Image 1 (cartoon, rainbow, N blue to C red):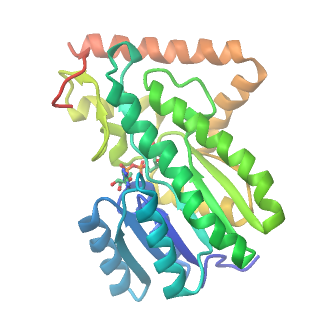
Image 2 (cartoon, helix red, strand yellow):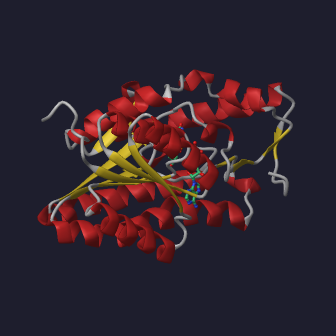
Length: 291
Ligand SMILES: NC(=O)c1ccc[n+]([C@@H]2O[C@H](COP(=O)([O-])OP(=O)(O)OC[C@H]3O[C@@H](n4cnc5c(N)ncnc54)[C@H](O)[C@@H]3O)[C@@H](O)[C@H]2O)c1
């Protein structure tokens, strides 16, 4: 393995304007690779791309809504014809809806399924054929610990992230014969805007400040996003499949595999704690048009 495995590689990163996607982009460019930051938040993507170019890196921004297969295919074709190849696809864009399912409206399912599952599927549809044609490539899907364990209090998110882990397992096996590698990132808690809802997600809570929401994450000890990106890219370069970071979250995954009942009990306690904290703050779970 070379010291900078991403040198001269081309990476298309969805959700590349913020959080994990942006940190992965910074690290790839630092290693001499080229990034395409594909995001609904074009302004943020452009700001990051020009910051990276100012430092001598190769980066472009592109407006992309991963819910549109046509738009995804167009961007994939444009990128491949401009750069000659796409070495990495980071299917990373994602949103969350916080709160229990008894408060859901249909859009709490639809919005999350459309971005977190359909968006990943469309990424595969758009880029996998190009990778098959070039006989190489690496698809990295961002799932979550919520894709491995019974993360309660975010049902649609948990459902889609389990689906992304399943999709990744099947694609890892199928892709091998085409020289296409597949990895799935399963972050625990990482310090990014999604923790308090993010730009396109929401929390079905009323009466909670952003500081209180972030305070509720304290027990999960969120990891710095640049540290996450550095460690994730090291694991990806080694071809690891299910990448759990921070590493200590693996204990929760092992507990679930050892005994699904134990996993349910652990997450039952975590949910109980969340309910108590909401009570303490005088907040409640409620669906609101303003969310
Ligand atoms: N931060 C965490 O603790 C954590 C934990 C587990 C998994 N994840 C996953 O990591 C991924 C990145 O999230 P993040 O933490 O960086 O949050 P973030 O909110 O900072 O970034 C998400 C990005 O996705 C973009 N996006 C949302 N909908 C889109 C769409 N339809 N089309 C294109 N772009 C869209 C947003 O504009 C944003 O730039 C997500 O899939 C998330 O579920 C995050």
